[in-house]
Length: 326
Image 1: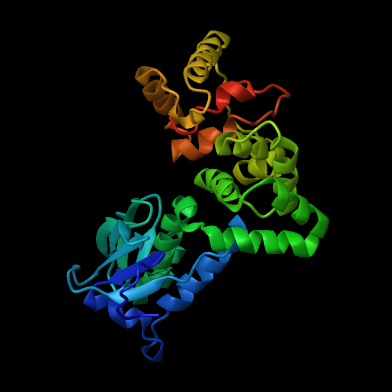
Image 2 (image 1 turned 120 degrees about the vertical axis):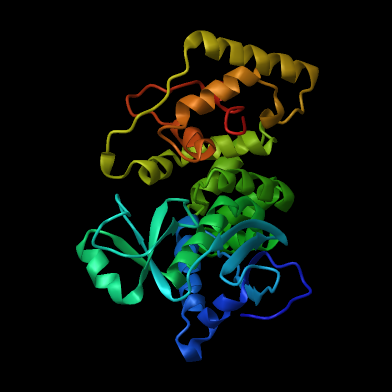
């Protein structure tokens, strides 16, 4: 939809005035259709329904600019050419293709904005050509995928539990008796912050029930669920049994991590594991080592720490838990 809203929308897209025709379906605008398609795909991949994107015009933006907001806070902006298509490839300065040099607004990669009449030519030259409506829809989807934990709310908890009840009624009843909706939401948000799909509600529920007597911390509960979902996670980042690199933490460093955890928990048994202080130089070094291979580092490192491709964990479960947020 397009228009003004006094409410704080979960996901909002604001358009400069030159981009408004992209949502006019009577004039061939297909932005709404593209966004709906990307929402549907992301919802199916992650396991809960991404809310509708509220679209409005915004005269404070540049004419060809757009802004994406989550819960009323602007997250990212992009700029496109409404009458052109975006071509991306290894070499955007191809002598046989004319266009305006720019960037892919979603992934900040070099791009060439070409005339729509040159699409076939660009494809034949090895470029991937993307229509302006799909460029914006892809950017919206990317922002959503990076803020799933902010998007997920109590209504989504209820929907997940209803889905579980329709498939496994006794399991759903047991789950409702051992965990509050608030704690369940915190646990799911921990998973979504690491882009872990929550499609397998049965495994998630079973793991919570098995752990809840001794584990109340949402980070610990989500860590246990990640272990239970290890095949799902590995298939996401390394499908078809492809070889995957992993980082191994040296035993001496792991010993230091265990010591830091022990001291912190002795001082405050309720301290969240992502609040345990670690040596800043270690955190910086860890991210620097990860960065050439994995982007964003926070997500991929967390996934890799549970990989056991050679029947050997890169680090023990208790040492791994403070790492995702540092």
